[in-house]
Image 1: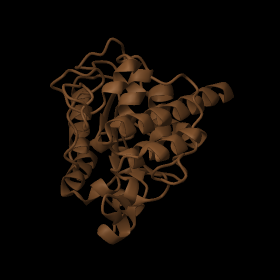
Image 2 (image 1 turned 180 degrees about the horizontal axis):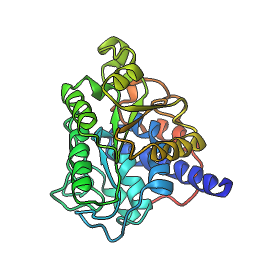
Image 3 (image 1 turned 135 degrees about the horizontal axis):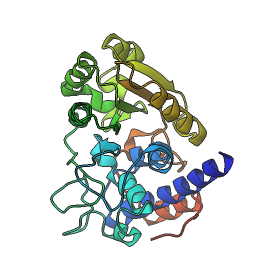
Image 4 (image 1 turned 120 degrees about the horizontal axis):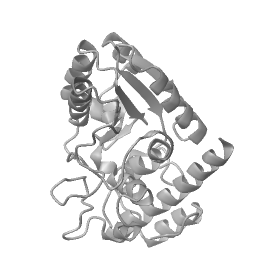
Length: 282
């Protein structure tokens, strides 16, 4: 496991470099949440998600992942490319004219790995519940994973989906909430206080796991293992994952101001100096 964890950590460092460079080069994007969720996405694709290549949109007999907080697309694109869904060199086209790597994931260009457009917040969990129900109806052993943000839970549609999943016993579904306490306009407790988040999910009928440090690779891997072990018990599972926005780059960490701001040249060099190049830049 130590070797596996070391590999995952090395990939996470390279993915962070990709994120910083992508956002800097187009002077547009969302580095804060992307950097904060890097361990989760690297652990998911590197140690847990069962998928086939070449990519097939239907995803029968494999696991599905839906990114609800689609603004952290730079992270997802990096991880997808580093796992062979499309060439790593394509990261250089991020948010450019006619690219497949739109600012928010889209399906019209047929980017491998993306099954649904996600930019309008609050919709990903509904899609995930539907996909998980479809797999149960088809006796498909594949699981469904969804990542959402805590600020995104301000959207009422999430709570309809949460209630629906519990009502229908969707127990092949794992939702992870990026619980970083920040959103575009400031701290979540000031914009729209979520209150006792674990109690809310439990009250809605979910099995709740608390991940205290979502920027520790070992804890993330272990939490995903634990979540999978709790499936098929007539309840959906949620991981409430505490992360630090902008993790890995000291001047970005913990601040909502880096939700959707690109670094300048000096800031980019400073950030990259903090992130070891482990697999080669694109």
